[in-house]
Image (cartoon, rainbow, N blue to C red; front, top):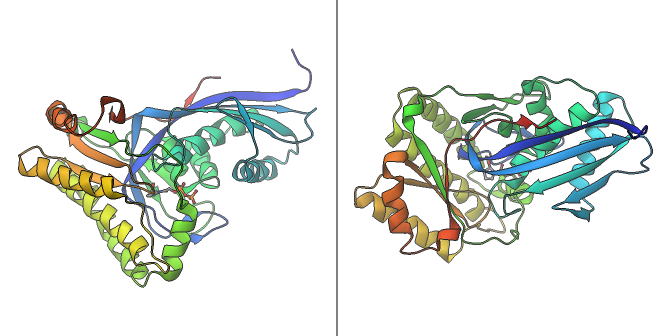
Length: 326
Ligand code: 2P0
């Protein structure tokens, strides 16, 4: 046993995809969102993070998929944690990701959820899931929601203490599936952080977005309560397009879509016309996610395979919340 080790922990956290999007901060330091959001945690993509606090270290050491990296966002997060824990030791962070990083498949959601849970335990704090959710938020907004499985709501709040996520109860007969269509595995050119800031500061439609997103959130919760997949899907799709209209109306304007994104959107609409009910959502990258129900997934996959490689399509079911491995 190494005498210098103060504590260690390893956690697995799954990514989530927002059905009502978070797009803009009202406090950048604390990562307080302008509006509430609702997401689905997936079962296929996750991050596994081990944190070891060691009194002999002179600085934090961060390894990503077994390679040593410098990462300011992680060091900033660890400084927030040290401050909260009143403990100035450094640590080793080892993260392995099954999510293509920064390609709009929400790798930061699982990454910071796993880091918040593992680092807080390793430094000796014994936090509730609600407290872990608040802490994860300081690393990345979407990570707030990845603490929990299934459908999750992030309550926007007004300060560090009242902005956190909570699980939404829903009927498992909703049978939600989400097929990720990977069109591009490369790192995106415009970070969500920049994209949000630019939308808040320069889109003339930003105030309308907040109003509409609140409305979408209310209607989405109603659809979930009523077990109404059609309403849930329609809100998911329109809310995503409303978010992306902020990027198109920013100055300078930008978009996360590429030509394959538009083709895939049209394909989803075609499938729907053929009687296969499904809806799309898109995040800060070109990849498209298709929401459907168990009963239609195989038929939809068959149609998608006429256009995409098998390895670029991943079927997800609702995934679990954070899992402590030790
Ligand atoms: C979401 N996205 O609700 C929205 C929809 C992407 C599109 O949250 O700046 O990595 O670290 O809080 O959470 C992605 O942005 O941004 C995101 P920060 P984050 O999932």
